[in-house]
Amino acid sequence: MPVGGPTAVLELGGLRLLTDPTFDPPGDHPIGDHVLTKTAPPAVDAAGIGAVDAVLLSHDQHPDNLDRAGRALLGAVPLVLSTAAAAGRVPGVTALPPWRHHDLGTVRITAVPALHGPPGTEHITGEVIGFVLTGAGLPTVYVSGDNASLDVVREIATRFPRIDVALLFGGAVRTPPIGDAQFTLGAAAMAEATRILDARHVVPLHIEGWTHFTEGPADVEAAFTAAALADRLHLPAPGRPIALPSA
Image 1 (cartoon, helix red, strand yellow):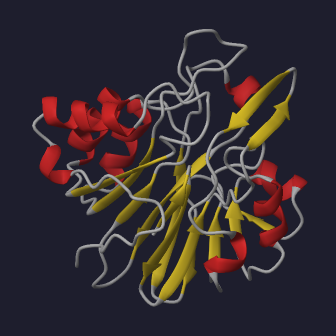
Image 2 (cartoon, helix red, strand yellow):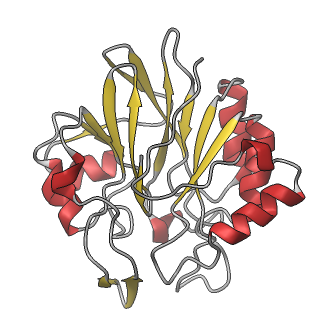
């Protein structure tokens, strides 16, 4: 179930997994010497999410991926998987480096790389990961996190040649200090990532609710239609569940 921004509840293999928790109301979030502005509330508040078995946190350093209410929720979750940097900053976080895995019930959670901006900006954007979820008899699910690199997507496709569902973070994010360069995939790149992964189903996340997102749902729909991939696209309606396919 998409909640808003990068936040969604995944039900897989009897588990409830939560991606990048953001539950603050609209408002300004200072980050460095500039401000990120949230424009829409979550479809479900933190209290309404209910119990989850784990949080899949792509990174902790940006408030559009982990905000104040999201941080407060982490203490009530039995497992939070994220980067080594996040584990050093946020109590209770378990580090999961790229290509390492953590088995939880019937689901194997593998961390995969993500590049949150153009190559060479890692010292600005910080460490980020995505996740691939696998299990016997389960669909394979890719959660991209804030990734802007199709080369990273190609590397993941090599290791995981079957992706049933891709949760692609988009929005074509642009903020200082790297000018017009993108911090996340744009709509056309999301369509190309779908082609690279040969993903059967795609749910775009992180495409609405903040002023630094320069592309939204309409751009994604247009890009997938132009790429003849519209049949694979499931545009989220925050607060409404989307059924995952069987393996």
